[in-house]
Length: 307
Image (cartoon, rainbow, N blue to C red):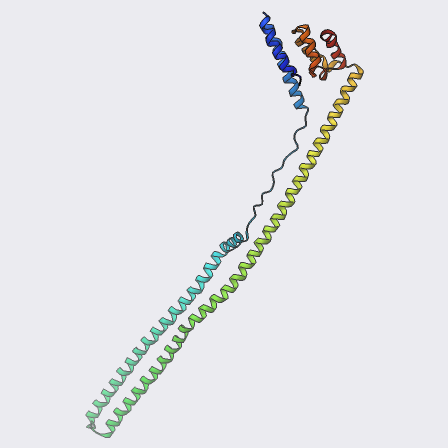
């Protein structure tokens, strides 16, 4: 493979540099070559169209069924806790009420029973005193009256006992029923909670699928836009390149030398610093001269350095 023109010229100039005394002129000419190559590369880069745009995709991290279930339970945690607490609180409140009603009924019984005893004790004492005053303490009348008072007291106490027993039994039944009512309330809540949880989970799954479909649709639209932009860029670059080639050909055909005068001037300066044989070899072997000059300018260099 032929040595590149830049490497060739650098090697050539290094040898020339050793033999020439005017290094300031040499360095100046070398800088012209570097500037020329830099500007040519920059012009080529600037002629390219910008890259087709790349769009940021919509992220859609897949959410598992387990994560959805946990999220649903977390959302219902407050509802579940407050509902179960309400059932327990109501149960405890009723148990406390029935227990207090039971204690109050027992206290009332004792107080009424004591009142009956006190009342009949006084009545029996008053009757006995009255009989003594009348001299009837041992008479059948006095005995019958005492007997009647005893019977009435017993009947009153029996009525009180029956009443308290009925109340206590009713309250005990209510307290016993609390466990059954609590269990039923918990079962009813569990059914309602399970239905609510299932509805929420299904809703979250539907939301997941909707977001997945939206992300896929959106990202596909971006892919289409990027592909379309890339195709447009490629077609435009191809069109511009064709136009450039046609324009160069047209200018060559018309003998337009304006675009190549600077190239010619720099290349002539470079070749003039070489020996005739070195300049002829560089012009013949390196394609950089012919590719960057019109035919007229190239043959002008060839007439001067290539024969």
